[in-house]
Image (cartoon, rainbow, N blue to C red; front, top):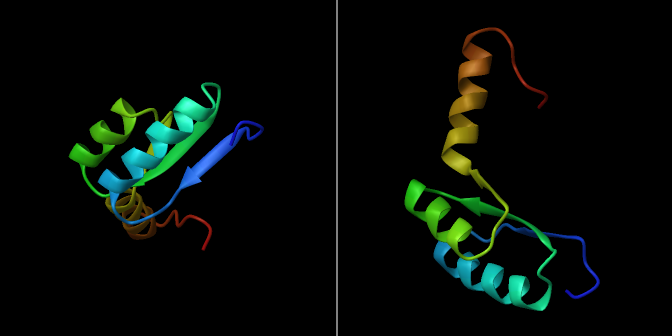
Length: 76
């Protein structure tokens, strides 16, 4: 990871993903880390361990459903 610019962590267990984020951050302090989360606790955990950005799956599903219901569906 020393030569990487960005890391996407998409494994389903946010707490295990935190370990990956920590190791990646140690290997490359400038790495842009984006991680998948399923709860607010996982978001906090990932951010505390070096993720720059998290995407909470349930929020994104809810956002897509709301956009559809309002007649403004996102790209499929």
